[in-house]
Image 1: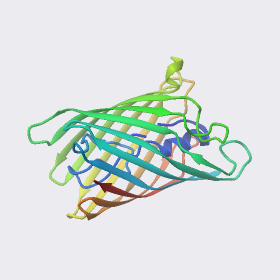
Image 2: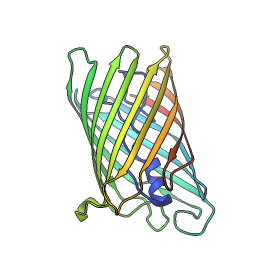
Image 3: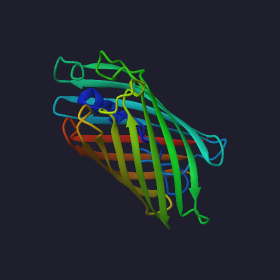
Image 4: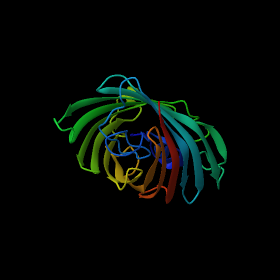
Length: 261
């Protein structure tokens, strides 16, 4: 998921574009469009493709993006995901990050390994590594021009049709610089409730917390929505949310599609 991003409108924009990793009924697919990941992995040899339209609004800017997230099952315990896409901004100022602009997003690579699970598959523990490559335009206010590295520990516990997901992660901002004052912690909590064979309610709260004084301010995000299983290998998701904290979005939305091949 976790998708990996920073301060100002440009940083915030990248946060909203980052790792939305997968969604569906509990125990069959990974979780999308939630930022909080689950501990499941895509079945070996299968490809899960998540795509959609994402929107965020602040007092000074509206940001739209089309994230694309293919995830390939490598083995019974491992998968490899990537997130990239296109974005455009309707701004209300002339500064970078506020003026109208468009361009590609950063590229994030995210391998995930399932470390342990109980005999009944009720509890699973996984680890994910996120490598964000600076492919977005820094002059246009879409990126920072440097690479970030994140490590996330993911736990999932299911009781029947109800699943809870917990994430704790550390993001090394500008990883090759070796300075820790601008790094961030990621904390996420999600819940998934399968109502019927076709409908699942999904929700989450997650926070990005600064490691030191040089980084972004703390932000807490809240998202909720539903997912419809149209067919066994095709799902539609809708999500709406908001956030609290300096430079955070007052409204976010997502309409997405998940295909499994």
